[in-house]
Image (cartoon, rainbow over all chains, first blue to last red; front, side):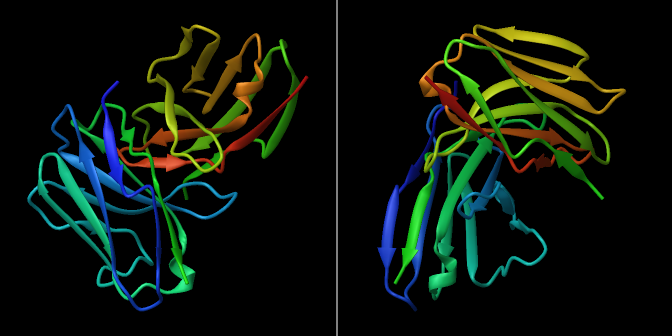
Amino acid sequence: GAVVSQHPSWVICKSGTSVKIECRSLDFQATTMFWYRQFPKQSLMLMATSNEGSKATYEQGVEKDKFLINHASLTLSTLTVTSAHPEDSSFYICSAKWRSDTEAFFGQGTRLTVV
Amino acid sequence: GQNIDQPTEMTATEGAIVQINCTYQTSGFNGLFWYQQHAGEAPTFLSYNVLDGLEEKGRFSSFLSRSKGYSYLLLKELQMKDSASYLCAVKDSNYQLIWGAGTKLIIKP
Protein backbone atom coordinates (compact mmCIF):
# COMPACT_ATOMS: atom_id res chain seq x y z
CA GLY A 1 0.00 0.00 0.00
CA ALA A 2 0.88 3.66 -0.14
CA VAL A 3 3.24 5.11 2.45
CA VAL A 4 2.53 8.07 4.66
CA SER A 5 5.37 9.24 6.85
CA GLN A 6 4.70 11.27 9.97
CA HIS A 7 7.39 13.00 11.95
CA PRO A 8 8.27 13.13 14.77
CA SER A 9 7.04 9.89 16.33
CA TRP A 10 7.05 11.44 19.76
CA VAL A 11 7.79 14.82 21.23
CA ILE A 12 7.93 16.30 24.69
CA CYS A 13 7.60 20.05 24.97
CA LYS A 14 7.18 22.66 27.64
CA SER A 15 3.85 24.31 28.24
CA GLY A 16 3.49 27.47 26.16
CA THR A 17 5.75 26.37 23.32
CA SER A 18 4.72 25.36 19.80
CA VAL A 19 5.19 22.00 18.14
CA LYS A 20 5.10 21.20 14.45
CA ILE A 21 4.16 17.76 13.15
CA GLU A 22 4.81 16.81 9.53
CA CYS A 23 2.86 14.39 7.40
CA ARG A 24 4.25 13.30 4.04
CA SER A 25 2.86 11.03 1.37
CA LEU A 26 5.92 9.31 -0.01
CA ASP A 27 4.71 7.58 -3.15
CA PHE A 28 1.49 9.28 -4.13
CA GLN A 29 0.01 12.73 -4.39
CA ALA A 30 -2.35 13.37 -1.52
CA THR A 31 -5.15 15.66 -2.60
CA THR A 32 -6.64 15.42 0.86
CA MET A 33 -5.03 14.98 4.24
CA PHE A 34 -6.74 14.46 7.56
CA TRP A 35 -5.57 15.18 11.06
CA TYR A 36 -6.90 13.15 13.96
CA ARG A 37 -6.42 13.20 17.68
CA GLN A 38 -6.80 10.14 19.83
CA PHE A 39 -6.94 10.13 23.60
CA PRO A 40 -6.14 6.91 25.48
CA LYS A 41 -8.71 4.16 24.98
CA GLN A 42 -10.80 6.34 22.70
CA SER A 43 -11.47 6.32 19.00
CA LEU A 44 -10.01 8.64 16.44
CA MET A 45 -11.44 12.14 16.50
CA LEU A 46 -11.18 14.09 13.28
CA MET A 47 -9.71 17.52 13.88
CA ALA A 48 -9.52 18.93 10.39
CA THR A 49 -9.46 18.13 6.70
CA SER A 50 -7.04 19.87 4.41
CA ASN A 51 -6.99 20.00 0.65
CA GLU A 52 -3.85 21.01 -1.15
CA GLY A 53 -3.69 24.72 -1.79
CA SER A 54 -6.75 25.66 0.23
CA LYS A 55 -7.57 26.38 3.84
CA ALA A 56 -8.25 23.50 6.16
CA THR A 57 -11.78 22.71 7.28
CA TYR A 58 -11.91 22.31 11.04
CA GLU A 59 -14.36 20.17 12.97
CA GLN A 60 -16.62 21.77 15.50
CA GLY A 61 -14.83 22.49 18.73
CA VAL A 62 -11.34 22.50 17.24
CA GLU A 63 -9.62 25.87 17.53
CA LYS A 64 -8.16 26.81 14.18
CA ASP A 65 -5.85 29.40 15.72
CA LYS A 66 -4.40 26.83 18.07
CA PHE A 67 -4.03 23.98 15.61
CA LEU A 68 -2.54 25.48 12.48
CA ILE A 69 -2.68 23.29 9.42
CA ASN A 70 -0.76 23.93 6.23
CA HIS A 71 -1.08 21.77 3.12
CA ALA A 72 1.25 23.60 0.79
CA SER A 73 2.02 20.75 -1.56
CA LEU A 74 0.50 17.47 -2.70
CA THR A 75 2.91 15.52 -0.54
CA LEU A 76 3.18 17.54 2.67
CA SER A 77 0.84 18.76 5.36
CA THR A 78 1.87 20.17 8.70
CA LEU A 79 0.03 20.55 11.99
CA THR A 80 1.37 23.13 14.41
CA VAL A 81 0.11 23.03 17.97
CA THR A 82 0.60 26.57 19.17
CA SER A 83 1.04 27.51 22.82
CA ALA A 84 0.68 23.89 23.84
CA HIS A 85 -0.76 23.02 27.23
CA PRO A 86 -0.83 19.73 29.14
CA GLU A 87 -4.40 19.06 28.00
CA ASP A 88 -3.11 19.01 24.41
CA SER A 89 -1.10 15.90 25.24
CA SER A 90 -2.44 13.23 22.94
CA PHE A 91 -1.71 10.94 20.03
CA TYR A 92 -1.96 12.88 16.76
CA ILE A 93 -2.39 10.92 13.55
CA CYS A 94 -2.50 12.10 9.96
CA SER A 95 -3.92 10.25 7.03
CA ALA A 96 -3.85 10.95 3.33
CA LYS A 97 -5.66 9.88 0.22
CA TRP A 98 -5.38 10.75 -3.42
CA ARG A 99 -9.03 10.47 -4.35
CA SER A 100 -12.34 10.78 -2.53
CA ASP A 101 -13.33 7.16 -3.09
CA THR A 102 -10.06 5.56 -2.09
CA GLU A 103 -8.88 4.36 1.28
CA ALA A 104 -6.93 6.65 3.54
CA PHE A 105 -3.41 5.72 4.53
CA PHE A 106 -2.19 6.62 7.97
CA GLY A 107 1.05 8.03 9.24
CA GLN A 108 2.74 6.40 12.21
CA GLY A 109 1.28 8.92 14.63
CA THR A 110 2.93 11.43 16.95
CA ARG A 111 2.69 11.15 20.69
CA LEU A 112 2.77 14.65 22.11
CA THR A 113 3.44 15.18 25.79
CA VAL A 114 3.25 18.71 27.13
CA VAL A 115 4.87 19.20 30.50
CA GLY B 1 -27.15 11.91 14.00
CA GLN B 2 -24.52 9.54 12.72
CA ASN B 3 -23.67 6.53 14.79
CA ILE B 4 -21.48 3.48 14.57
CA ASP B 5 -21.75 0.72 17.14
CA GLN B 6 -19.33 -2.08 17.84
CA PRO B 7 -18.64 -4.09 20.98
CA THR B 8 -16.16 -2.54 23.38
CA GLU B 9 -14.18 -5.67 24.07
CA MET B 10 -14.04 -9.31 23.01
CA THR B 11 -11.96 -12.25 24.12
CA ALA B 12 -11.02 -15.26 22.01
CA THR B 13 -8.63 -18.18 22.10
CA GLU B 14 -5.53 -18.60 19.97
CA GLY B 15 -6.33 -20.68 16.89
CA ALA B 16 -10.06 -19.99 17.08
CA ILE B 17 -12.36 -17.79 15.00
CA VAL B 18 -13.88 -14.49 16.11
CA GLN B 19 -16.47 -12.23 14.52
CA ILE B 20 -16.56 -8.53 15.32
CA ASN B 21 -19.83 -6.83 14.43
CA CYS B 22 -20.44 -3.26 13.42
CA THR B 23 -23.77 -1.54 12.87
CA TYR B 24 -24.07 1.92 11.46
CA GLN B 25 -26.51 4.75 10.89
CA THR B 26 -25.03 7.43 8.69
CA SER B 27 -26.14 10.14 6.30
CA GLY B 28 -25.37 8.32 3.10
CA PHE B 29 -22.98 5.49 2.49
CA ASN B 30 -19.88 5.35 0.35
CA GLY B 31 -18.07 2.39 1.81
CA LEU B 32 -17.11 0.74 5.06
CA PHE B 33 -13.58 0.20 6.32
CA TRP B 34 -12.02 -1.99 8.94
CA TYR B 35 -8.74 -0.96 10.52
CA GLN B 36 -6.50 -2.68 13.02
CA GLN B 37 -4.79 -0.61 15.67
CA HIS B 38 -2.18 -1.91 18.08
CA ALA B 39 -1.74 0.05 21.27
CA GLY B 40 0.27 3.22 20.74
CA GLU B 41 0.31 2.85 16.96
CA ALA B 42 -1.64 4.31 14.06
CA PRO B 43 -4.42 2.26 12.46
CA THR B 44 -3.58 0.01 9.56
CA PHE B 45 -6.01 -0.78 6.76
CA LEU B 46 -7.60 -4.22 6.75
CA SER B 47 -10.55 -4.14 4.37
CA TYR B 48 -12.97 -2.04 2.36
CA ASN B 49 -16.56 -3.00 1.45
CA VAL B 50 -18.83 -0.94 -0.72
CA LEU B 51 -21.06 -3.69 -2.16
CA ASP B 52 -23.01 -6.31 -0.24
CA GLY B 53 -21.26 -9.56 0.39
CA LEU B 54 -18.12 -11.09 1.73
CA GLU B 55 -14.59 -9.93 0.95
CA GLU B 56 -11.91 -12.44 1.87
CA LYS B 57 -8.28 -11.58 2.39
CA GLY B 58 -6.22 -14.33 3.91
CA ARG B 59 -7.20 -14.97 7.52
CA PHE B 60 -9.43 -11.89 7.54
CA SER B 61 -12.84 -11.53 5.90
CA SER B 62 -15.29 -8.66 5.97
CA PHE B 63 -19.00 -8.78 5.26
CA LEU B 64 -21.42 -6.00 4.42
CA SER B 65 -25.20 -5.70 4.28
CA ARG B 66 -26.16 -2.19 3.29
CA SER B 67 -29.88 -2.78 3.76
CA LYS B 68 -29.27 -3.79 7.37
CA GLY B 69 -26.55 -1.22 8.07
CA TYR B 70 -24.37 -4.07 9.24
CA SER B 71 -20.88 -5.37 8.77
CA TYR B 72 -18.65 -7.88 10.46
CA LEU B 73 -14.97 -8.63 10.47
CA LEU B 74 -14.11 -12.32 10.72
CA LEU B 75 -10.70 -13.36 11.94
CA LYS B 76 -9.69 -17.01 11.52
CA GLU B 77 -6.83 -19.02 13.00
CA LEU B 78 -6.27 -16.37 15.61
CA GLN B 79 -2.72 -15.55 16.57
CA MET B 80 -1.47 -13.71 19.62
CA LYS B 81 -0.37 -10.83 17.40
CA ASP B 82 -4.03 -10.28 16.46
CA SER B 83 -4.56 -8.78 19.91
CA ALA B 84 -5.44 -5.20 19.01
CA SER B 85 -8.32 -2.81 18.61
CA TYR B 86 -10.42 -3.15 15.48
CA LEU B 87 -12.02 0.00 14.19
CA CYS B 88 -15.05 0.14 11.94
CA ALA B 89 -15.42 3.32 9.87
CA VAL B 90 -18.08 4.38 7.36
CA LYS B 91 -17.65 6.92 4.62
CA ASP B 92 -20.76 9.09 4.51
CA SER B 93 -22.35 11.04 1.66
CA ASN B 94 -19.69 13.75 2.02
CA TYR B 95 -16.96 11.11 1.82
CA GLN B 96 -16.09 11.79 5.44
CA LEU B 97 -15.06 8.88 7.60
CA ILE B 98 -17.22 8.30 10.65
CA TRP B 99 -15.41 6.16 13.19
CA GLY B 100 -16.66 3.58 15.63
CA ALA B 101 -15.10 3.50 19.09
CA GLY B 102 -13.24 0.32 18.31
CA THR B 103 -13.36 -3.23 19.66
CA LYS B 104 -10.49 -4.35 21.82
CA LEU B 105 -9.74 -7.97 20.98
CA ILE B 106 -7.91 -10.00 23.60
CA ILE B 107 -6.39 -13.29 22.50
CA LYS B 108 -5.71 -15.90 25.14
CA PRO B 109 -3.37 -18.89 24.70
